[in-house]
Image (cartoon, rainbow, N blue to C red; front, side, top):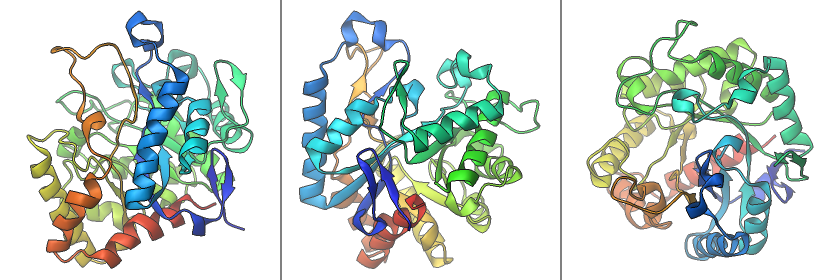
Length: 344
């Protein structure tokens, strides 16, 4: 029997409803937990996030949200579970890692571990429960995350593997493939927009995943619409993987949300005309709570926190509809496709 694994237990895929595949319940850079000015109150934050999710459920029928926050970027199993209880929204947590660049992902402790060790950790997160603060929890993950790419304006250097993927990233990717092969869950990924100017990072990811026996039909390539070409997107679809349309209303690497929305809408419609509707999922990449110090001119608030939770439905969907991408297509992308991908 197929299930979708949420933090409060397994559900039937038929109960998932409208699903966003890449969000962040709490997003926090490693180190903020030691900052006097980034302390937070669990009950207040849980209530605030649950309030926003309840609004999304009542106003837009958003029934399921994937929290694609890996452990080193602030994943908090107890908070995710409590928000799910208070909101009534199904929340899917992630195991896996962010990219190794700029010190953000794959902490030193994990860089010393073998592929087999990483695989075991991911499998146990999915089947037993995630660990928090060196303590086991009963809150299980329902998806795996892997990532590649730098944060800056220049593409990732070519690594020793001949790809624009670091050696620690490659280990995590191979471990994720093996864990997926054992469990059958989906893998959702982070690729960096600037890398699409020199390679197809989605294909590089798929090459490694498939070398380890992963099912490309259960892989989502994240962020490809920010800077990818139609040919690059088609190539990923032809490999059997799905494409995530994210940063809706969030002008990452673009001058405005308007420009990015229009670019993505054109690509979505072009891919749909080519028969790739079943390969698309939508999300924001929104931060419902951003663990950080004070907002300053040097470190302003990010658009990922500011975007309205209803933007997709109030502004992006009407833009698509004017181009012929109507309610039936939207249902396929928001309900049918994520339901298939998240089931195992």
